[in-house]
Image 1 (cartoon, rainbow, N blue to C red):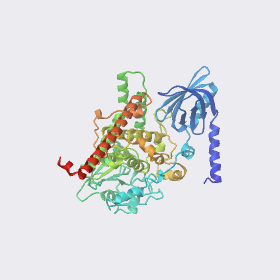
Image 2: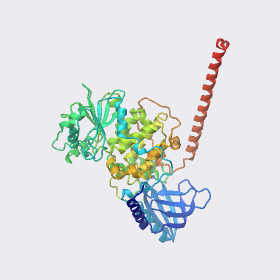
Image 3: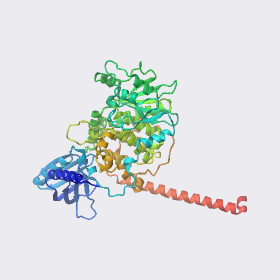
Image 4: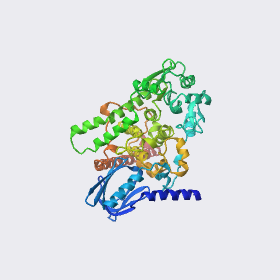
Length: 563
């Protein structure tokens, strides 16, 4: 029920939008889109959408969220204005607008509406679903439900409410899994010794051998070599008698050493003698953002020069980042599955490269994470509830003209790595590439509230579960699940080990080249493949039916059994 105060707030927000829209409608606008016919029609601006509709037959309307717009460019030839709209999903569209004043007004409004700072003004707060919500996605992946699965395998862990008011660690959820023998007072002390209060928590339990993977923020050892015995007790509580563990630091030793000067640091061998520390080289967010910009620029290069293309692709270093992240995830999985050792993963904050590694290691180790629902649960646990700052990281994409602040394609790189594994093991994933592309799009711009905010605390403060619809509510409808399902899927209970050789890692064309070249032939081939698979299933069913009939006849006629 909407209260009088709620109606007043809503009207005030609508008024704010109206003030930003100088020209709400222009006729005779021509739209140019990749691989689609040119359309002439009426351009309308609303508080959240740029809409172009046409009276031409069989033309698809354009409905573009302002939040999906990364940047715009204006050009003029006489009185005709052109606006180039560059989107966060990497699409580029062109609008030819008659009249210079109208063009300037439209451009000004788009720039204002696509850069709103207030989260509560974003579309998910206004969106009302046109579909029946069968399952409330906000309640689909609660920590207490995940813990019940853990309890069925081991009694060595407990669910702590130490962070129920988000005061111990602002970026953690209210409930976290910790060793049973470690009390809440100890957790509070450890939180003061870890970056952002991110004390070590359970990320994954390996059912096969009982080994675990934990994640945390860096220890705040500083230049004086500060020590915390409670921290040592906590992570040692995860070790089996006589066993050693591995600490995987996602930073190079040089970067980790430099962190000491800023109060950070790493675990010393003297204080953590049962743990072996391994340093890897996953780049920080500002480097990754620059890499994405260079990659997209290379993909949009129309020069048709092979040397130029290969040179630009290499200069972006994108594939190098993919390789480094996958290599580190394979290392974590190897320590757990083959070495029979527990693992602690951290970088600096523990909200970026740490989550890439822990989530990819689970894709490798746990077949449940390769199902559609299991992957949703993984994104919830290891990204949304684990405090990845989506609001900052996905504020801009590859086309933004403003100076990057905290933007970085951390989640996109994770999805790229998943796609690399999916491509190498095409029958081991229940979901198709379409699901990964969908998650990329919704992380940057969405009608759903799932990726708004940067932590459970922020989402709770914004009342997202009450005021917005979850993406999972949309995805888990039967017709959508059917669209996202991989037709080649056959459940594989084994650990899968992807190749990280440079020759094995390809450019993710489904994201980076989908607006640059037509996918018509690939789409037709995919449809043919689905048709063949369905026909094969029909034939298999007929064979099984005939076998049953033959078995029935044999039981009824003893003479048949003798032949």
